[in-house]
Image 1 (cartoon, helix red, strand yellow):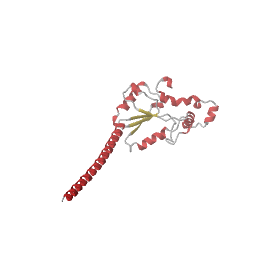
Image 2: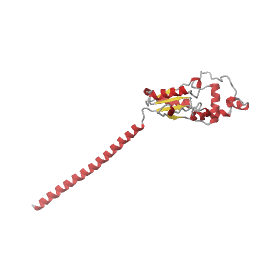
Image 3: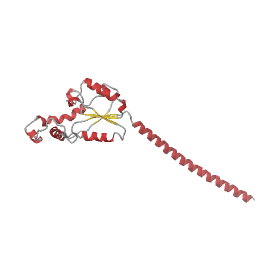
Image 4: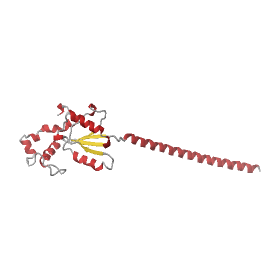
Length: 209
């Protein structure tokens, strides 16, 4: 009888130990799942924190640096990725804006909330938003080897491009090659024209241009 009691006690102890082990294992798995859950939550929070639905990007394009191809990609993907692309058309192709126009463009860009997030693009010099607004947009740009850019622009003025092939450029009909232009010291191939890229980053100050 005594041996039977011992066996029962031993069996009961084994059962209790077994379930304690199971509970401990489940507790470890639960802690692991909880940690993974909080890790995922924090990751999502970080993504949301870094995603700004009011983002403003300005691409003040330097001419003949591949800007048309680049902004074409933005137009292709903007709808799928829920952002807008807006062209800033500067009158008479001036790269420098008057003070009233600087103020107007800053106000328009910062207050047009329905079109955010957005990329604005156009051939205009860097504009310091801090002078007119507390909002500072993100600027992006592309540059090119100065001589390559100048040669490309030289022929662009004469033959245009594939983007608007039927538009007559101001040097249309001029068949003088760039090499011949250099030999005859014509203004279109003046080495000083290679400076053009720098003012786009410098800004609207007179000495920039």
